[in-house]
Amino acid sequence: MKEIIILEGLTKRFNDLTAVDNVSFTVREGEVFGFLGPNGAGKTTTISMLATLLNPTSGKASVNGFNIWTQRDAVRKSIGIVFQDPSLDEELTAYENMDFHGRLYHIPRDTRIKKIEELLKLVELDERKNDLVKKFSGGMRRRLEIARGLMHEPKVLFLDEPTLGLDPQTRNHIWEYIQRLSTEKNVTIILTTHYMEEADRLCDRMAIIDKGKIIALDTPKNLKDGIGGDVITVETPSAEPLRLYVEEFPWYKSSKEHDGMLTINVTDAEKHIAEIVNLSCQNNIEIKSINVHKPTLEDVFLYFTGRTIREEEAGSVEHMRMMRRAEMRR
Image (cartoon, rainbow, N blue to C red; front, side, top):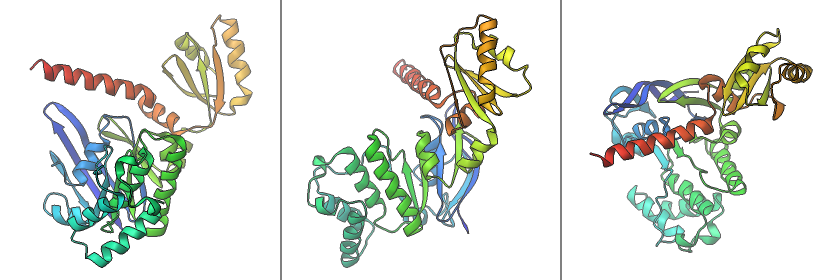
Protein backbone atom coordinates (compact mmCIF):
# COMPACT_ATOMS: atom_id res chain seq x y z
CA MET A 1 0.00 0.00 0.00
CA LYS A 2 1.55 3.28 -1.09
CA GLU A 3 2.17 6.28 1.12
CA ILE A 4 -0.15 9.06 -0.04
CA ILE A 5 0.96 11.69 2.51
CA ILE A 6 4.55 12.24 3.63
CA LEU A 7 5.73 14.82 6.17
CA GLU A 8 9.40 15.42 6.94
CA GLY A 9 10.35 17.85 9.68
CA LEU A 10 7.30 20.05 9.08
CA THR A 11 7.42 23.14 11.30
CA LYS A 12 5.27 26.24 11.67
CA ARG A 13 6.10 29.24 13.85
CA PHE A 14 4.02 32.32 14.54
CA ASN A 15 6.50 34.86 15.89
CA ASP A 16 7.73 33.28 19.16
CA LEU A 17 5.11 30.52 19.17
CA THR A 18 6.02 27.17 17.60
CA ALA A 19 2.63 25.73 16.67
CA VAL A 20 3.99 22.66 14.86
CA ASP A 21 7.42 21.42 15.86
CA ASN A 22 9.43 19.22 13.47
CA VAL A 23 6.59 16.78 12.68
CA SER A 24 7.31 13.72 10.54
CA PHE A 25 4.99 10.84 9.63
CA THR A 26 3.42 9.08 6.64
CA VAL A 27 -0.17 8.09 5.82
CA ARG A 28 -1.04 5.11 3.64
CA GLU A 29 -3.63 5.19 0.86
CA GLY A 30 -7.11 4.29 2.08
CA GLU A 31 -6.16 4.71 5.72
CA VAL A 32 -8.13 6.57 8.37
CA PHE A 33 -5.38 8.43 10.19
CA GLY A 34 -6.19 10.28 13.37
CA PHE A 35 -4.68 13.36 14.95
CA LEU A 36 -5.54 13.28 18.64
CA GLY A 37 -4.89 16.23 20.90
CA PRO A 38 -6.45 19.21 22.66
CA ASN A 39 -7.31 22.53 21.05
CA GLY A 40 -4.10 24.43 20.41
CA ALA A 41 -1.96 21.29 20.11
CA GLY A 42 -1.16 21.89 16.42
CA LYS A 43 -3.72 19.66 14.69
CA THR A 44 -5.46 22.29 12.58
CA THR A 45 -2.19 24.07 11.77
CA THR A 46 -0.73 20.82 10.41
CA ILE A 47 -3.84 20.17 8.31
CA SER A 48 -3.76 23.77 7.01
CA MET A 49 -0.17 23.30 5.80
CA LEU A 50 -0.98 20.01 4.09
CA ALA A 51 -3.95 21.70 2.41
CA THR A 52 -1.66 24.58 1.23
CA LEU A 53 -3.63 27.13 3.27
CA LEU A 54 -0.55 27.94 5.36
CA ASN A 55 3.09 27.98 4.32
CA PRO A 56 5.39 25.97 6.60
CA THR A 57 8.27 27.75 8.30
CA SER A 58 10.49 24.79 7.44
CA GLY A 59 10.36 21.13 6.47
CA LYS A 60 8.63 19.49 3.52
CA ALA A 61 5.55 17.43 2.73
CA SER A 62 3.73 15.86 -0.18
CA VAL A 63 0.09 14.90 -0.74
CA ASN A 64 -0.80 12.35 -3.43
CA GLY A 65 2.74 12.70 -4.74
CA PHE A 66 2.58 16.50 -5.07
CA ASN A 67 4.83 18.92 -3.20
CA ILE A 68 2.91 21.33 -0.95
CA TRP A 69 5.44 24.09 -1.70
CA THR A 70 5.75 23.86 -5.47
CA GLN A 71 2.61 22.01 -6.68
CA ARG A 72 -0.11 23.72 -4.70
CA ASP A 73 -2.83 23.51 -7.39
CA ALA A 74 -2.26 19.79 -7.86
CA VAL A 75 -2.44 19.26 -4.09
CA ARG A 76 -5.73 21.18 -3.90
CA LYS A 77 -7.25 19.09 -6.67
CA SER A 78 -6.30 15.96 -4.72
CA ILE A 79 -7.98 16.91 -1.45
CA GLY A 80 -11.34 17.68 0.11
CA ILE A 81 -11.69 19.59 3.36
CA VAL A 82 -14.35 19.79 6.04
CA PHE A 83 -13.33 22.59 8.37
CA GLN A 84 -14.15 22.82 12.06
CA ASP A 85 -16.07 26.06 11.44
CA PRO A 86 -19.24 25.95 9.26
CA SER A 87 -18.69 27.00 5.64
CA LEU A 88 -22.04 26.38 3.94
CA ASP A 89 -24.19 29.12 2.40
CA GLU A 90 -27.31 29.09 4.56
CA GLU A 91 -29.39 30.95 1.96
CA LEU A 92 -28.89 28.17 -0.60
CA THR A 93 -30.44 24.72 -0.66
CA ALA A 94 -28.43 21.57 -0.06
CA TYR A 95 -28.47 20.89 -3.80
CA GLU A 96 -27.36 24.44 -4.65
CA ASN A 97 -24.45 24.27 -2.20
CA MET A 98 -23.30 21.07 -3.86
CA ASP A 99 -23.83 22.41 -7.36
CA PHE A 100 -21.86 25.59 -6.63
CA HIS A 101 -18.94 23.55 -5.32
CA GLY A 102 -19.01 21.34 -8.41
CA ARG A 103 -18.92 24.38 -10.69
CA LEU A 104 -15.87 25.73 -8.86
CA TYR A 105 -14.07 22.51 -9.74
CA HIS A 106 -15.32 22.66 -13.35
CA ILE A 107 -17.15 19.35 -13.07
CA PRO A 108 -19.23 18.80 -16.26
CA ARG A 109 -22.97 19.28 -15.80
CA ASP A 110 -24.06 15.67 -16.35
CA THR A 111 -21.34 14.35 -14.04
CA ARG A 112 -22.16 17.04 -11.49
CA ILE A 113 -25.85 16.11 -11.36
CA LYS A 114 -25.01 12.43 -10.95
CA LYS A 115 -22.48 13.08 -8.19
CA ILE A 116 -24.82 15.36 -6.26
CA GLU A 117 -27.57 12.76 -6.26
CA GLU A 118 -25.16 10.00 -5.28
CA LEU A 119 -23.51 11.92 -2.44
CA LEU A 120 -26.70 13.36 -0.97
CA LYS A 121 -28.04 9.81 -0.84
CA LEU A 122 -24.82 8.65 0.83
CA VAL A 123 -25.35 11.10 3.71
CA GLU A 124 -29.13 10.58 3.74
CA LEU A 125 -30.02 14.09 2.65
CA ASP A 126 -31.45 13.27 -0.78
CA GLU A 127 -35.01 13.92 0.44
CA ARG A 128 -33.97 17.31 1.83
CA LYS A 129 -31.96 18.45 -1.18
CA ASN A 130 -34.31 21.35 -1.99
CA ASP A 131 -34.48 22.67 1.59
CA LEU A 132 -32.54 25.76 2.60
CA VAL A 133 -29.48 24.96 4.70
CA LYS A 134 -30.57 27.45 7.38
CA LYS A 135 -33.34 24.98 8.24
CA PHE A 136 -30.84 22.15 8.84
CA SER A 137 -29.67 20.88 12.21
CA GLY A 138 -25.98 20.90 13.09
CA GLY A 139 -25.65 17.22 12.22
CA MET A 140 -27.34 17.66 8.85
CA ARG A 141 -25.03 20.55 8.01
CA ARG A 142 -21.98 18.48 8.92
CA ARG A 143 -23.17 15.63 6.72
CA LEU A 144 -23.72 18.06 3.85
CA GLU A 145 -20.22 19.46 4.29
CA ILE A 146 -18.76 15.95 4.08
CA ALA A 147 -20.77 15.25 0.91
CA ARG A 148 -19.62 18.56 -0.61
CA GLY A 149 -16.00 17.75 0.18
CA LEU A 150 -16.32 14.58 -1.91
CA MET A 151 -17.80 16.24 -5.00
CA HIS A 152 -14.57 16.31 -6.99
CA GLU A 153 -13.56 12.76 -5.91
CA PRO A 154 -10.53 13.70 -3.81
CA LYS A 155 -7.87 11.15 -2.97
CA VAL A 156 -7.60 12.60 0.54
CA LEU A 157 -10.33 14.02 2.76
CA PHE A 158 -9.38 16.22 5.72
CA LEU A 159 -11.94 16.24 8.52
CA ASP A 160 -11.16 18.82 11.19
CA GLU A 161 -13.13 17.99 14.38
CA PRO A 162 -16.06 16.68 12.27
CA THR A 163 -18.35 15.93 15.21
CA LEU A 164 -17.53 18.86 17.48
CA GLY A 165 -20.63 20.05 19.33
CA LEU A 166 -22.91 17.31 17.99
CA ASP A 167 -25.10 15.13 20.17
CA PRO A 168 -24.02 11.48 20.70
CA GLN A 169 -26.59 10.01 18.30
CA THR A 170 -25.63 12.37 15.46
CA ARG A 171 -21.97 11.78 16.21
CA ASN A 172 -22.51 8.05 15.74
CA HIS A 173 -24.16 8.68 12.36
CA ILE A 174 -21.18 10.77 11.22
CA TRP A 175 -18.83 7.98 12.32
CA GLU A 176 -20.76 5.52 10.16
CA TYR A 177 -20.39 7.77 7.09
CA ILE A 178 -16.65 8.16 7.69
CA GLN A 179 -16.19 4.39 7.93
CA ARG A 180 -18.16 3.88 4.71
CA LEU A 181 -16.03 6.41 2.86
CA SER A 182 -12.91 4.54 3.84
CA THR A 183 -14.13 1.02 3.14
CA GLU A 184 -16.36 1.60 0.10
CA LYS A 185 -14.61 4.45 -1.70
CA ASN A 186 -11.00 3.93 -0.55
CA VAL A 187 -10.72 7.60 0.41
CA THR A 188 -7.76 8.39 2.63
CA ILE A 189 -9.08 10.29 5.64
CA ILE A 190 -7.12 12.53 7.97
CA LEU A 191 -9.22 13.07 11.07
CA THR A 192 -8.39 15.60 13.76
CA THR A 193 -10.22 15.15 17.03
CA HIS A 194 -10.01 15.49 20.78
CA TYR A 195 -12.72 12.87 21.33
CA MET A 196 -11.04 9.69 22.57
CA GLU A 197 -13.93 7.41 21.60
CA GLU A 198 -13.98 8.86 18.09
CA ALA A 199 -10.28 8.19 17.53
CA ASP A 200 -10.52 4.70 19.01
CA ARG A 201 -13.45 3.68 16.84
CA LEU A 202 -12.44 5.19 13.50
CA CYS A 203 -8.67 5.31 13.17
CA ASP A 204 -6.45 2.63 11.66
CA ARG A 205 -3.50 4.51 13.12
CA MET A 206 -3.25 7.70 15.08
CA ALA A 207 -0.75 10.27 16.26
CA ILE A 208 -1.03 11.97 19.61
CA ILE A 209 0.13 15.57 19.28
CA ASP A 210 0.87 17.78 22.27
CA LYS A 211 2.29 21.32 22.14
CA GLY A 212 3.17 20.92 18.47
CA LYS A 213 5.08 17.63 18.84
CA ILE A 214 4.14 14.06 17.94
CA ILE A 215 4.55 12.16 21.20
CA ALA A 216 3.14 8.78 20.12
CA LEU A 217 2.07 7.14 16.85
CA ASP A 218 0.60 3.67 16.36
CA THR A 219 -2.70 1.82 16.11
CA PRO A 220 -5.13 2.59 18.96
CA LYS A 221 -4.78 -1.01 20.16
CA ASN A 222 -0.99 -0.92 20.22
CA LEU A 223 -0.99 2.41 22.03
CA LYS A 224 -3.28 1.02 24.73
CA ASP A 225 -1.41 -2.28 24.94
CA GLY A 226 1.85 -0.34 25.24
CA ILE A 227 0.81 0.93 28.66
CA GLY A 228 0.22 -2.64 29.75
CA GLY A 229 -1.75 -4.13 32.60
CA ASP A 230 -4.75 -2.45 34.20
CA VAL A 231 -5.48 1.05 35.44
CA ILE A 232 -6.59 1.89 38.98
CA THR A 233 -7.85 5.45 39.43
CA VAL A 234 -8.05 6.75 42.98
CA GLU A 235 -9.73 10.03 43.90
CA THR A 236 -7.92 11.33 46.96
CA PRO A 237 -6.74 14.64 48.43
CA SER A 238 -3.47 12.87 49.36
CA ALA A 239 -2.30 11.61 45.98
CA GLU A 240 1.41 12.18 46.56
CA PRO A 241 1.66 10.29 49.90
CA LEU A 242 -0.39 7.41 48.47
CA ARG A 243 1.83 7.24 45.40
CA LEU A 244 4.97 7.01 47.56
CA TYR A 245 3.50 4.08 49.48
CA VAL A 246 2.12 2.23 46.46
CA GLU A 247 5.27 2.42 44.36
CA GLU A 248 7.00 0.12 46.87
CA PHE A 249 4.80 -2.83 45.87
CA PRO A 250 6.22 -5.33 43.33
CA TRP A 251 3.08 -5.17 41.19
CA TYR A 252 3.35 -1.39 40.74
CA LYS A 253 4.31 -0.26 37.22
CA SER A 254 3.81 3.52 37.01
CA SER A 255 1.52 6.33 38.18
CA LYS A 256 0.42 9.87 37.40
CA GLU A 257 -1.15 12.53 39.59
CA HIS A 258 -3.75 14.71 37.91
CA ASP A 259 -6.75 16.82 38.83
CA GLY A 260 -7.19 15.33 42.33
CA MET A 261 -6.67 11.81 41.04
CA LEU A 262 -3.91 9.22 41.24
CA THR A 263 -3.82 6.91 38.23
CA ILE A 264 -1.83 3.73 38.87
CA ASN A 265 -0.79 1.24 36.19
CA VAL A 266 -0.56 -2.27 37.62
CA THR A 267 -0.86 -5.92 36.71
CA ASP A 268 -3.94 -7.88 37.87
CA ALA A 269 -5.60 -4.81 39.38
CA GLU A 270 -8.50 -6.71 40.99
CA LYS A 271 -6.05 -8.53 43.25
CA HIS A 272 -4.51 -5.33 44.57
CA ILE A 273 -7.41 -2.96 45.22
CA ALA A 274 -7.79 -4.31 48.74
CA GLU A 275 -4.09 -3.68 49.40
CA ILE A 276 -4.45 -0.05 48.30
CA VAL A 277 -7.53 0.44 50.49
CA ASN A 278 -5.86 -1.20 53.52
CA LEU A 279 -2.72 0.87 52.96
CA SER A 280 -4.79 4.04 52.86
CA CYS A 281 -6.63 3.17 56.07
CA GLN A 282 -3.41 2.34 57.90
CA ASN A 283 -1.91 5.71 56.94
CA ASN A 284 -5.07 7.84 57.34
CA ILE A 285 -5.29 8.60 53.63
CA GLU A 286 -8.80 9.50 52.55
CA ILE A 287 -10.15 7.73 49.45
CA LYS A 288 -13.21 9.37 47.89
CA SER A 289 -13.57 6.83 45.08
CA ILE A 290 -11.65 4.05 43.37
CA ASN A 291 -12.21 2.24 40.07
CA VAL A 292 -10.49 -0.24 37.78
CA HIS A 293 -10.50 -0.36 33.98
CA LYS A 294 -8.46 -1.48 31.01
CA PRO A 295 -6.25 1.22 29.44
CA THR A 296 -8.05 3.74 27.21
CA LEU A 297 -6.70 6.41 24.90
CA GLU A 298 -7.30 8.88 27.73
CA ASP A 299 -4.86 6.81 29.78
CA VAL A 300 -2.42 6.77 26.86
CA PHE A 301 -2.55 10.57 26.65
CA LEU A 302 -2.06 10.83 30.42
CA TYR A 303 0.82 8.33 30.28
CA PHE A 304 2.74 10.34 27.68
CA THR A 305 1.91 13.88 28.80
CA GLY A 306 1.23 13.62 32.52
CA ARG A 307 -2.11 15.36 32.03
CA THR A 308 -5.59 14.40 30.89
CA ILE A 309 -6.84 15.87 27.65
CA ARG A 310 -9.51 17.77 29.62
CA GLU A 311 -6.78 19.51 31.61
CA GLU A 312 -4.97 20.28 28.36
CA GLU A 313 -8.21 21.76 26.99
CA ALA A 314 -8.47 24.09 29.99
CA GLY A 315 -4.85 25.11 29.58
CA SER A 316 -5.39 25.80 25.89
CA VAL A 317 -8.38 28.03 26.63
CA GLU A 318 -6.43 30.00 29.22
CA HIS A 319 -3.50 30.33 26.80
CA MET A 320 -5.82 31.73 24.12
CA ARG A 321 -7.24 34.22 26.62
CA MET A 322 -3.75 35.37 27.54
CA MET A 323 -2.88 35.78 23.86
CA ARG A 324 -6.02 37.89 23.30
CA ARG A 325 -5.27 40.08 26.33
CA ALA A 326 -1.72 40.62 25.13
CA GLU A 327 -3.01 41.51 21.66
CA MET A 328 -5.48 44.06 23.11
CA ARG A 329 -2.71 45.80 25.06
CA ARG A 330 -0.72 46.50 21.91
